[in-house]
Amino acid sequence: MNDLIYFDNAATTPIRPEVYEEIKPYLETYYGNASSVYSIARESKKAIDKARAQVATALNAKPEEIFFTGCGSESDNWVLKGVACALKDKGNHIITSCIEHHAILHTCEFLEENGFEVTYLPVDEYGKVSVEDVRKAIRPTTILVSIMFANNEIGTIEPIKEIGALCKEKGIYFHTDAVQAVGHVKIDVQDMNIDFLSLSGHKLGAPKGIGALYIRKGCKIKNLIHGGQQERGRRAGTENVIGIVALGKAIELAMEEMDEVTARLVYLRDKVINSILSQVDYARLNGHPTDRLPGNVNISFEFIEGESMLLLLDANKICASSGSACTSGSLDPSHVLLAIGLPHEKAHGSLRITLGYQNTEEQVDKLIEVLPPIVQRLRDMSPLYEEIKNKK
Ligand SMILES: *Cc1c(COP(=O)(O)O)cnc(C)c1O
Image (tube, rainbow, N blue to C red; front, side, top):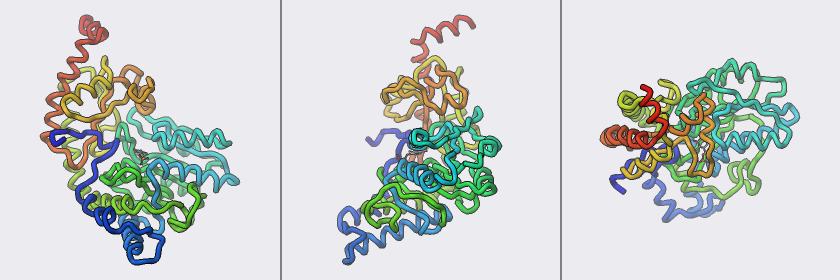
């Protein structure tokens, strides 16, 4: 697997070696249940406390405002359902955007089936939500605004600080799904007036199956998972000590390295974007040119299918992702690409390359070398492309 080039870091990331070292004692020796009283259990408890402080520090929150969950999706479900339940006497209206992750969108649909009203704000051609649109959508019955920090497909970073200030002014809770942003861009829940924030371990070098929700002290929210008294009675279930330790370590490392990694990834990202767009015609960048995640490249190629590009890249040992979802059993292109105004045929031919701290310039150069011929090869089989060429 050594020559594998992994460019799908927005889907998931490999476990970082430093994280693996950190969790080893909890895999091998310290298996105690953190709720028990003997010494081996106290090791688990101590480890959880340390990780909670690490996560809190990364967000400029207090440790007692961090609650560990099973994943980013659970955090999203918890905040939407939990706030809806807690504030149902105050109002039934929620504002979100149409480019959210399905963990938000499908939860909103569930709430709509249960008497809540949801406004799905549109985005501009770069995938940006307008703060004015949020302002106009606010009703006397609005109980929550939920806008993602950065989009997982096109990498666009949303005006979170401005939306946070607006929500504070209006006295409405503000949640952000920051699963793609945590560890990659600077986040300060105080400065940005964020009341709730979702994050997930496996997008930043920890294993799958661990997430967290930041809940500002004093904010009203009902529990999602009922049972024991774990997480100070707010989220039941025996703690995933390994996942929690891993998340704490991963987030701490990401914060320490952020400036250096960002500079490197922005350079590599822009190298990919510029060389592909200069070599390939009928191609366009999706997402914001500058307000985008350091590692995100999303390009649409006309006349071809994203899926076929993925197969040919895979033959070159390159892992990437596409905006069409044929393999996932759906013929509909990504809701995000449609929301930024791409017609179906362009949305189908999109390719997402997401770089991580571990990727090298050599790997990026390999991509730049193999991708244009792949696109050409596929276009040579396309009757549509043939037609356009003949017209020229
Ligand atoms: C991955 C992702 C999620 C879901 O996180 P899981 O831990 O996989 O459940 C939610 N929101 C965004 C933006 C994501 O990228």
